[in-house]
Length: 301
Image 1: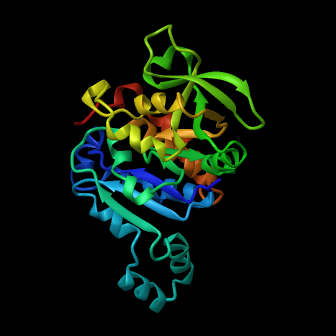
Image 2: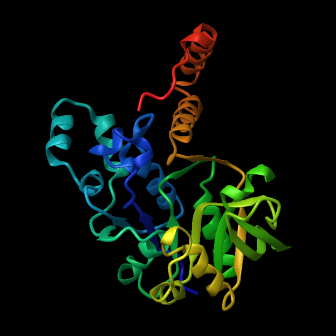
C-alpha cells in the first residue's frame, strides 16, 4: 500500500465575500493572528508527514508562491540585525527545495475541476486534499489522524464533524455505517440535502484522502450544482468501486471563507496562545462591556 506523500490545496477562488480586502490580496493570504490562512493548512499537512505540497492557483495568486519561496533579502536583514528567533521561525516554515508545485486552474469550474488540474503532479498514488478556507484547531492535527486511519484501511477517507441538524442543508452530509477502530464506513454522501432529508448531521469539513482513480472519474464528470464540476458527484461514483471511511474530527473548525468565520478564527487562535491569552481576553471583555447597541454598525461595503 502506497503511503500518503502529497497534498493538494485548491487556491484559485476569488474571495468575493472579502472584497475590497481581496481586490489585490488573495483570500488565502489574509492573516489569522500572525500567519496567513494558507500557512495553517500547509502546517497541518506537514505535521501529517506530507512531503509534497501542490497548489492549484488562478490569476493574481503569485504572492502565494512568493510566500513559500526563500526571501534572501529578508533573511539577510534579520541575520544582520541579530533577530535570530524570527529568522529561525521563518526557516522552520520554509518548505525544502522541490517540495512545492504550482499549477493553474485557468477556468473556474469548481472544486472537482481544481482537483483534476493536479492530476499530473499527483500521479498514480493516494493524496490528501485540504480546502484552505477551513482551518483547524486541536492538539493533534486532523490530517495526521486521517493519515493514521488510512494506514489501517488503505481506502478513501473523509473528515466530518457534527452540525446543528437544522443547518444540515447547508453542507455536504454523509451517512454513517459500521464503526471501525478510529472511524466508520460511509454509506452515502449528499451535497446540501433538502431540509429534513439528511442521512445524519455529520458534515464534510474540508479534509480528504483520496485514491488516484478519482482523476479518471473527474476527467469525464459532467457539471453539477452551480454549473460546476462537483467533487462530491465524482466521489459518489468512486464509492461504487471503493469504500469510503469517515473520520469524526473532534477539534474546532473555522470557515475562513466567510467574514464571520475569519473573525472567529482570529479570536480563537489569539486566545489559544499563551503569550496573548490574558491580554486578549481582557480586551474582548472590555469591548463587550463598552459597546452600546446604538454604536453597533452595519456592513460598510
